[in-house]
Image (cartoon, rainbow, N blue to C red; front, side, top):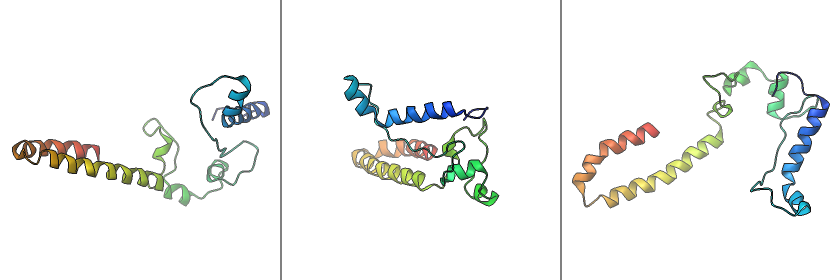
Length: 138
């Protein structure tokens, strides 16, 4: 994004750069050197003066209703909400991440109880601190 419209030359340069990133292995083979641990596949969601059917493109063209914007909590990014991933907290990807974290933490809690099982006094003394840290993180 930028303040002035993209020129055709800028769009062309951007598309060439994205194509180069997608084909980094071929470029490395031709040049005979490794350019870094870059492995990517880019997906263009919107281009100026082009018609894309992506949700991103529809939002930027103003083709979605205010109800859609409210339902997905899409609004202008400001200093108090600077990150784009804050836009839709109900997105299935975030729910999947939360579930994965829960699956990783539960065995750790069981391991802590098993490890400290013989030291009940230590465990009882640590429980308030563990719950404080756990709920702060949650």
